[in-house]
Amino acid sequence: MVCAHVTYGPPAIAVGLPSCVENALTVLSPAQTAIPETDSPLVLALPKGRILKAAAPLLHMAGIVPGPDFSDDKSRLLRFETNNPGIDVVRVRSFDVATFVAFGGAQIGICGADVLMEFDYPEIYAPLDLGIGGCRISIAQPKDRRGQEDNPNRLSQVRVATKYPSLTRRHFAARGINASIVHLHGAMELAPVLDLSHLIVDLVDTGSTLRANGLEETQTIAHITSRLIVNRTALKTQPERIGAIINRFRAALAKEHRA
Image 1 (cartoon, rainbow, N blue to C red):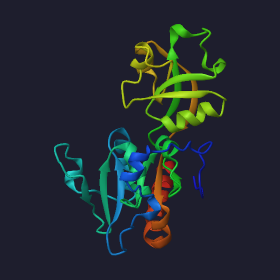
Image 2: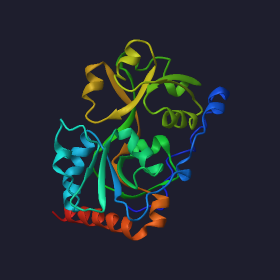
Image 3: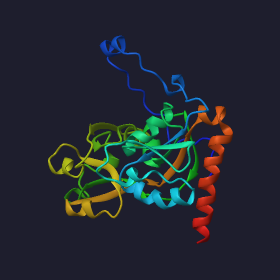
Protein backbone atom coordinates (compact mmCIF):
# COMPACT_ATOMS: atom_id res chain seq x y z
CA MET A 1 0.00 0.00 0.00
CA VAL A 2 1.43 3.39 -1.00
CA CYS A 3 0.22 6.62 0.50
CA ALA A 4 1.56 10.13 0.37
CA HIS A 5 0.26 10.93 3.83
CA VAL A 6 -2.11 9.08 6.07
CA THR A 7 -4.45 10.92 8.42
CA TYR A 8 -5.59 8.77 11.30
CA GLY A 9 -8.81 10.48 12.31
CA PRO A 10 -9.20 13.97 13.81
CA PRO A 11 -6.10 16.01 14.72
CA ALA A 12 -4.50 15.16 18.03
CA ILE A 13 -5.61 17.27 20.97
CA ALA A 14 -2.80 19.61 22.00
CA VAL A 15 -1.69 19.11 25.58
CA GLY A 16 0.23 22.05 27.03
CA LEU A 17 3.15 21.71 29.43
CA PRO A 18 3.10 23.41 32.82
CA SER A 19 4.77 26.82 32.63
CA CYS A 20 7.58 25.73 34.94
CA VAL A 21 8.45 22.88 32.57
CA GLU A 22 8.21 25.08 29.47
CA ASN A 23 10.60 27.55 31.06
CA ALA A 24 13.10 24.83 31.96
CA LEU A 25 13.06 22.83 28.73
CA THR A 26 13.42 23.52 25.05
CA VAL A 27 11.35 20.86 23.31
CA LEU A 28 12.64 20.07 19.83
CA SER A 29 10.36 19.00 17.03
CA PRO A 30 11.54 16.18 14.74
CA ALA A 31 12.05 18.69 11.94
CA GLN A 32 14.70 20.50 14.01
CA THR A 33 16.89 17.43 14.50
CA ALA A 34 19.79 16.44 12.28
CA ILE A 35 19.79 13.63 9.71
CA PRO A 36 23.10 11.75 9.36
CA GLU A 37 25.26 12.60 6.37
CA THR A 38 25.10 10.36 3.34
CA ASP A 39 28.43 8.71 4.14
CA SER A 40 26.99 7.32 7.40
CA PRO A 41 25.03 4.05 7.49
CA LEU A 42 21.28 4.42 7.34
CA VAL A 43 19.64 3.30 10.57
CA LEU A 44 16.66 0.96 10.48
CA ALA A 45 14.68 0.92 13.76
CA LEU A 46 13.08 -2.42 14.62
CA PRO A 47 10.60 -3.07 17.43
CA LYS A 48 11.29 -5.63 20.11
CA GLY A 49 8.84 -8.49 20.64
CA ARG A 50 6.32 -10.19 18.41
CA ILE A 51 6.57 -7.74 15.50
CA LEU A 52 10.30 -8.33 15.30
CA LYS A 53 9.74 -12.08 15.05
CA ALA A 54 7.15 -11.56 12.33
CA ALA A 55 9.44 -9.15 10.47
CA ALA A 56 12.48 -11.47 10.45
CA PRO A 57 11.53 -13.42 7.27
CA LEU A 58 10.69 -10.17 5.46
CA LEU A 59 14.03 -8.65 6.43
CA HIS A 60 15.80 -11.73 5.09
CA MET A 61 13.88 -11.54 1.80
CA ALA A 62 14.77 -7.85 1.58
CA GLY A 63 18.45 -8.82 1.87
CA ILE A 64 19.00 -7.22 5.28
CA VAL A 65 20.70 -9.63 7.67
CA PRO A 66 21.79 -8.27 11.09
CA GLY A 67 24.97 -9.54 12.73
CA PRO A 68 24.93 -12.64 14.97
CA ASP A 69 24.60 -10.62 18.19
CA PHE A 70 21.20 -9.41 17.03
CA SER A 71 19.63 -12.82 17.72
CA ASP A 72 21.45 -13.29 21.04
CA ASP A 73 18.98 -12.60 23.86
CA LYS A 74 21.91 -12.12 26.26
CA SER A 75 23.50 -9.38 24.16
CA ARG A 76 23.38 -5.90 25.67
CA LEU A 77 23.96 -4.25 22.31
CA LEU A 78 21.17 -2.14 20.86
CA ARG A 79 22.78 -1.18 17.54
CA PHE A 80 23.96 -3.82 15.09
CA GLU A 81 25.76 -3.89 11.77
CA THR A 82 24.21 -5.85 8.91
CA ASN A 83 25.48 -7.67 5.84
CA ASN A 84 25.12 -4.32 4.07
CA PRO A 85 27.71 -1.75 5.24
CA GLY A 86 25.25 1.02 4.36
CA ILE A 87 22.58 -0.16 6.82
CA ASP A 88 22.66 -0.58 10.61
CA VAL A 89 19.70 -1.76 12.68
CA VAL A 90 18.66 -0.70 16.18
CA ARG A 91 16.32 -2.62 18.46
CA VAL A 92 13.97 -0.43 20.50
CA ARG A 93 10.59 -0.57 22.26
CA SER A 94 7.72 -0.79 19.78
CA PHE A 95 6.28 2.49 21.06
CA ASP A 96 9.62 4.26 20.46
CA VAL A 97 10.18 3.31 16.80
CA ALA A 98 8.08 6.18 15.46
CA THR A 99 9.87 8.68 17.72
CA PHE A 100 13.33 7.51 16.61
CA VAL A 101 12.30 7.90 12.97
CA ALA A 102 10.42 11.20 13.40
CA PHE A 103 13.38 12.82 15.16
CA GLY A 104 15.93 11.46 12.68
CA GLY A 105 17.74 9.07 15.02
CA ALA A 106 16.74 6.40 12.53
CA GLN A 107 15.81 7.11 8.93
CA ILE A 108 13.66 4.00 8.44
CA GLY A 109 11.62 1.79 10.74
CA ILE A 110 9.02 -0.91 11.10
CA CYS A 111 6.15 0.29 13.23
CA GLY A 112 2.63 -0.74 14.17
CA ALA A 113 -0.16 1.44 12.83
CA ASP A 114 -1.38 1.81 16.42
CA VAL A 115 1.78 3.76 17.29
CA LEU A 116 1.42 5.93 14.17
CA MET A 117 -2.18 6.67 15.11
CA GLU A 118 -1.21 7.59 18.67
CA PHE A 119 1.63 9.99 17.82
CA ASP A 120 0.54 11.15 14.34
CA TYR A 121 3.99 12.58 13.53
CA PRO A 122 3.86 14.68 10.33
CA GLU A 123 7.58 13.94 9.82
CA ILE A 124 6.80 10.28 9.09
CA TYR A 125 5.88 8.84 5.70
CA ALA A 126 4.48 5.29 5.64
CA PRO A 127 4.92 3.95 2.09
CA LEU A 128 4.24 0.25 2.71
CA ASP A 129 1.80 -1.86 4.68
CA LEU A 130 3.88 -4.92 5.56
CA GLY A 131 0.85 -6.99 6.53
CA ILE A 132 2.48 -8.37 9.68
CA GLY A 133 1.59 -8.06 13.36
CA GLY A 134 -2.12 -8.08 12.62
CA CYS A 135 -4.43 -7.23 15.54
CA ARG A 136 -6.97 -4.55 16.44
CA ILE A 137 -7.48 -1.66 18.84
CA SER A 138 -10.72 -2.24 20.69
CA ILE A 139 -12.87 -0.90 23.47
CA ALA A 140 -13.71 -3.44 26.17
CA GLN A 141 -15.75 -3.44 29.36
CA PRO A 142 -16.76 -5.97 32.05
CA LYS A 143 -19.35 -8.47 30.85
CA ASP A 144 -21.51 -7.85 33.91
CA ARG A 145 -22.03 -4.22 32.81
CA ARG A 146 -23.64 -5.24 29.53
CA GLY A 147 -26.91 -3.38 29.07
CA GLN A 148 -26.48 -1.25 32.17
CA GLU A 149 -27.23 2.47 32.13
CA ASP A 150 -23.52 3.32 32.09
CA ASN A 151 -23.28 2.31 28.44
CA PRO A 152 -20.56 4.69 27.11
CA ASN A 153 -22.65 5.58 24.08
CA ARG A 154 -25.18 7.19 26.41
CA LEU A 155 -22.68 9.19 28.46
CA SER A 156 -21.14 12.61 28.00
CA GLN A 157 -18.08 11.57 30.02
CA VAL A 158 -16.35 8.24 30.58
CA ARG A 159 -13.17 7.11 32.33
CA VAL A 160 -10.93 4.93 30.15
CA ALA A 161 -7.72 3.05 30.96
CA THR A 162 -5.34 2.85 28.01
CA LYS A 163 -1.78 3.24 26.78
CA TYR A 164 -3.17 5.26 23.84
CA PRO A 165 -4.33 8.54 25.44
CA SER A 166 -4.35 10.67 22.28
CA LEU A 167 -6.01 8.08 20.09
CA THR A 168 -8.61 7.37 22.78
CA ARG A 169 -9.45 11.03 23.36
CA ARG A 170 -9.89 11.59 19.61
CA HIS A 171 -12.12 8.56 19.24
CA PHE A 172 -14.51 9.54 22.02
CA ALA A 173 -14.40 13.28 21.21
CA ALA A 174 -15.61 12.51 17.69
CA ARG A 175 -18.70 10.97 19.34
CA GLY A 176 -19.28 13.88 21.70
CA ILE A 177 -17.90 12.05 24.73
CA ASN A 178 -15.26 13.49 27.04
CA ALA A 179 -12.80 10.70 27.87
CA SER A 180 -10.97 10.97 31.18
CA ILE A 181 -7.79 8.94 30.69
CA VAL A 182 -6.12 6.59 33.15
CA HIS A 183 -2.73 6.15 31.46
CA LEU A 184 -1.37 2.64 32.02
CA HIS A 185 1.38 0.68 30.28
CA GLY A 186 0.16 -2.83 31.06
CA ALA A 187 -2.32 -5.00 32.96
CA MET A 188 -5.08 -2.93 31.36
CA GLU A 189 -7.68 -5.61 32.08
CA LEU A 190 -7.41 -4.95 35.82
CA ALA A 191 -8.56 -1.34 35.56
CA PRO A 192 -12.34 -1.92 35.28
CA VAL A 193 -12.20 -4.80 37.77
CA LEU A 194 -10.55 -2.57 40.38
CA ASP A 195 -12.76 0.43 39.52
CA LEU A 196 -9.94 2.49 38.03
CA SER A 197 -12.01 2.95 34.88
CA HIS A 198 -15.30 2.13 33.19
CA LEU A 199 -13.64 0.90 29.99
CA ILE A 200 -10.30 0.03 28.48
CA VAL A 201 -8.87 0.73 25.03
CA ASP A 202 -6.17 -1.77 24.14
CA LEU A 203 -4.64 -3.98 21.47
CA VAL A 204 -6.52 -7.23 21.04
CA ASP A 205 -5.32 -10.31 19.20
CA THR A 206 -7.32 -13.41 20.16
CA GLY A 207 -9.27 -11.78 23.01
CA SER A 208 -8.34 -14.59 25.40
CA THR A 209 -6.87 -12.23 28.02
CA LEU A 210 -10.04 -10.14 27.98
CA ARG A 211 -12.24 -13.20 28.45
CA ALA A 212 -10.03 -14.61 31.22
CA ASN A 213 -10.53 -11.37 33.16
CA GLY A 214 -14.28 -11.06 32.62
CA LEU A 215 -14.17 -8.42 29.87
CA GLU A 216 -15.67 -8.33 26.40
CA GLU A 217 -15.01 -6.25 23.31
CA THR A 218 -17.73 -3.73 22.60
CA GLN A 219 -16.24 -1.91 19.64
CA THR A 220 -13.27 -2.12 17.26
CA ILE A 221 -11.61 1.25 16.75
CA ALA A 222 -9.13 0.15 14.07
CA HIS A 223 -7.55 -2.92 12.54
CA ILE A 224 -3.77 -2.80 12.88
CA THR A 225 -0.82 -4.04 10.84
CA SER A 226 2.82 -2.95 10.80
CA ARG A 227 4.14 -0.40 8.31
CA LEU A 228 7.48 0.48 6.82
CA ILE A 229 8.06 4.10 7.81
CA VAL A 230 10.65 6.66 6.74
CA ASN A 231 11.70 10.12 7.87
CA ARG A 232 10.43 12.62 5.29
CA THR A 233 13.53 14.82 5.46
CA ALA A 234 15.82 11.82 4.99
CA LEU A 235 13.76 10.72 2.00
CA LYS A 236 14.14 14.16 0.43
CA THR A 237 17.89 14.41 1.08
CA GLN A 238 18.79 10.77 0.35
CA PRO A 239 16.10 9.63 -2.09
CA GLU A 240 18.20 7.04 -3.90
CA ARG A 241 19.46 5.26 -0.77
CA ILE A 242 16.14 5.21 1.03
CA GLY A 243 14.17 4.55 -2.16
CA ALA A 244 16.34 1.47 -2.76
CA ILE A 245 15.44 0.09 0.67
CA ILE A 246 11.74 0.77 0.13
CA ASN A 247 11.98 -1.08 -3.18
CA ARG A 248 13.68 -4.02 -1.46
CA PHE A 249 10.77 -4.35 0.94
CA ARG A 250 8.25 -3.88 -1.88
CA ALA A 251 9.92 -6.69 -3.84
CA ALA A 252 10.02 -8.89 -0.73
CA LEU A 253 6.28 -8.38 -0.22
CA ALA A 254 5.58 -9.23 -3.85
CA LYS A 255 7.67 -12.38 -3.55
CA GLU A 256 5.89 -13.35 -0.34
CA HIS A 257 2.47 -12.88 -1.95
CA ARG A 258 3.49 -15.07 -4.92
CA ALA A 259 4.68 -17.88 -2.62
